[in-house]
Image (cartoon, rainbow, N blue to C red; front, side, top):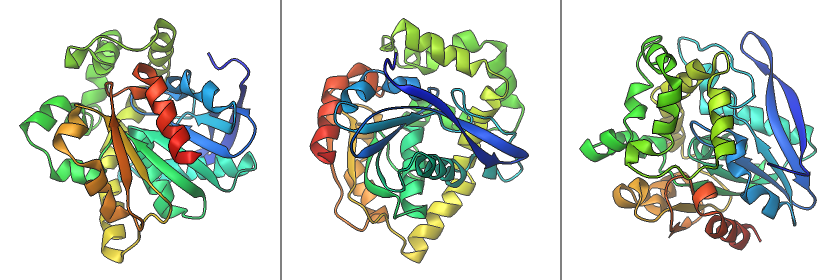
Length: 296
């Protein structure tokens, strides 16, 4: 996977000292940052990224706490895994690579980091595409039985340390495939090589705790930041196009265009495409086409 991509690590300040962000980069032309979701890593882009690198400089990074990036310990306010902290990592990485301004695609958790990045560093992002998400605040405020069933991990992972960490650690070999699709009664769409990478990274020291802290932050400090932005009238300044799974949870329960619009200064566009939640691996042709159409 990622043949022809250069691999690197970037040192960045994190709680308790220096940390690092793992990334791959290839291509030439306008820069684009691809961010992954839970419980994955940059590996999720292994089909789409090489196609985009034919005309662009493509950077795929592991968010802090995921993949081979650093996994700092959590803190009482969950600031270490706030989307603000995770977004700052990515701004620093891209500046280090020589890209103070770039296009951004974020799937799942990466989309939430992307939303925060656009709000906190508006000069850094030229265009933004969130993939198969609704804003975090809209999801928590729109919770019902179906969402709580489908997104059970949103409520499980936020429980106090070490409850979810201990349960997941007891049988990560069962938990991870369940999260990757078996919970929906759907076939696993990831390649065996990608699955092995996701499992390897989930078994790294601190990884399970980091995943939990990511969600604890979303249910606390991230909501504070989102509410503060809305109250202050801060909006995403760049063009935003949402893409989501046709018939999926986001499609059935939320209107991504409508729910993203309050966060955006410009009219939001969007489209549903066939496939499940993991569109980059299940529907790479359709997702690549959407990215090419929007970003040019």
